[in-house]
Length: 390
Ligand code: PHB
Image 1 (spheres, helix red, strand yellow):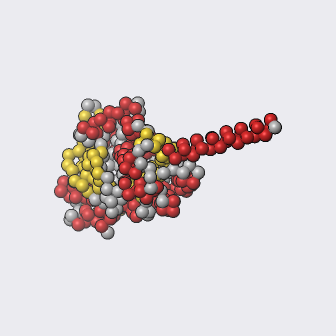
Image 2 (spheres, protein in one colour; image 1 turned 90 degrees about the vertical axis):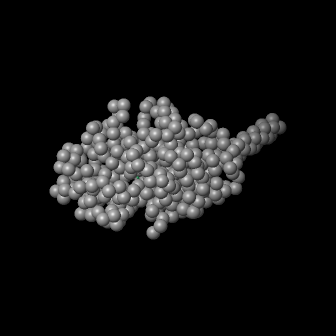
Image 3 (cartoon, protein in one colour; image 1 turned 45 degrees about the vertical axis):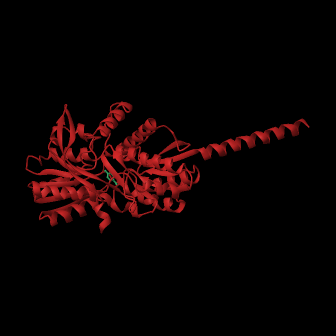
């Protein structure tokens, strides 16, 4: 009798526990944030995680009646690992959104999981044009290389740069940067005397830069992923390329704000095109930079941080509108067409392409208050991804 009573009580307790868990699951909104936290792309993971946590600290973790939970995973920027983690997050953790994606191959590897499970996938970093076409569930809050590269190819020939050598990382974003820069520069009457590609992982820039020195173009156009810029800059200066009259230009990845201040005065005068600079002179950005630095021991937010911060904004607003009802499709629909002022300036998620439309700025490295910044001096407004018109 006593035993039966005990069993009964246990069963009730288990039932009660189960019910609490079910309610908790229903009341929770989970974001699976997959980032490279270690390895070559670690700065991207560090920046985006910090930005996502800042957004949550500023906006609370209860949205549309749900408790928001952030689950951070380190994929070490190995695409197979990214994919496996996404699968586990969807199947085991039942996340409502997948987000992050430090490099293009990681985003592309995961796209089929978003499609199959109808889970919105917010790309906060990767920037190859075609990514948003890999799944109808992908939304992007970073940028595209064609956006930045075309703007540079319009600026250069108007500023005494006619003969250019290109040097890019040999994978998606690098190939996009090369293609769109070269096409537009030729269209504008410029000349590309050589196009060089370096391996994405552990590149040795020395032999390539030696070749550039021998070719003696007016400028070297560079794309390397965030985190690799300082190595390029160092070797460019060590080889005395600037003294030989070769200018360094590129998309803003090479003068990444995460590393720029440590590059030294040799970086002064380098002109790049990009969607975000820590020095962007708006009130929204000033507040963002201040809060980010305060929360992260003075760390300077770079363009990856802004991609993460805005990605969280897009997710939060979609959750507010849907109150977590209607699953992935409703959430996705509420992400499309969002328009708001980001720390980068005005931005818009094009409902047709699910890609970001934004200003691209021309910036020159200058010293302000003893620190190096990408100081904006011109803007091309509301740039759509030129890769989508092909
Ligand atoms: C990418 O892999 O898509 C990527 C990574 C870092 C960048 C830009 C693009 O700075």
